[in-house]
Image 1 (cartoon, rainbow over the protein chains, first blue to last red):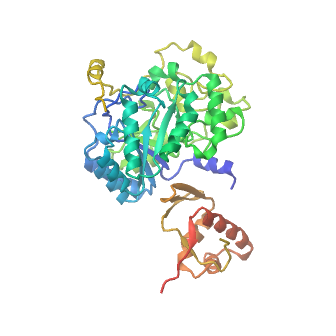
Image 2: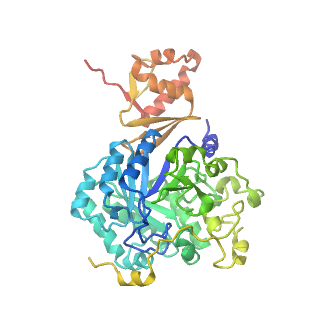
Image 3: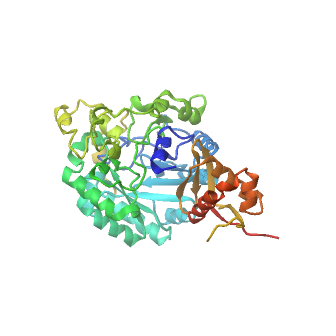
Length: 376
Length: 92
């Protein structure tokens, strides 16, 4: 079977996701300006420890090999380690994303002693000024301290996870050098206009010239740099980047949010892309296998306005979430279409008129200002 | 390692195999790689390796006709390289 027909098979959906993201909590010590889930305050409907374990039981039965845990900041949950151990104990590997605030020496040693665990430390600038402008004051020092602790504890190869913005594209080589210094693996992902990112995307997303720079850089570094396959819209430049060239939403990917709602992917927390809730009868498995939304996403999708473009096979029309939250039609070009085919449509969409994220757990501004991160 | 009809193989103990419509997904918990088994018959053979003395007897038991053996040897060779299967240790 050729690679292409395998992708066609994947588009029809899998019996269980291969990339499941589970945001454990909307609570977060930071207030990043591009937060996909508009996190900050805990939601009182958050899943309990028992409910979370029930989900892990379901995922084990579905033979989900590993899960991506995020938030919010997942380590603020008091049962974080309990859930981690329960998951790994059930044969479900865990990769979790953290800002590193809670990885002190003791936690680093505890994490280093566990199997089947990957850690992604979020860092959006090699220097504090670039990083903290997006992730908040003190967050650069927080991440570096966590990485130092993981290194000292001999955790092994953790990941440094970078959201590429127009302010850090020029730092890609430095990020790679930093990862090499720590014996870590670099992961760079695309900035999405989701959550609070919907408000900041226009100012932060890479320019057209920078998109080319990212593409060339990724081609040069190949599979040594992880991307979560998030830059497939850049394939329209020419040679395909490594990875599955397709939108996996509802087909091989989905999101479980902190209150159990299941969305098509981590970038579309909005009612339009909500498939169900794990608390419903039948649990997660029924949502994955039978929800109307997921079944419709597994049908052949129309190329729409992109049908006449010679690059459609390469870029697949780009990212559904990026189109949705910038107010563009889903069957047209991606807002960052490298041919510029979305530029005109984007220019006539009034700022503020595109769909708003489904939920907002941001802290009130006054509270955020008062709670500046405590220094190292 | 060269895979032959006489090779004695098993699924790598750190690998989990999940059947799918197109064949199966295999996940290696050690190197974190996801591998696609792109034909249901390959999945059947891989899962049966442990129950038979060698590759040839496994293929026969799974009803794979002799003309297809070379392609299965090629598939198993590739799966050995990606550590989905490995040489079985003979005990006792």
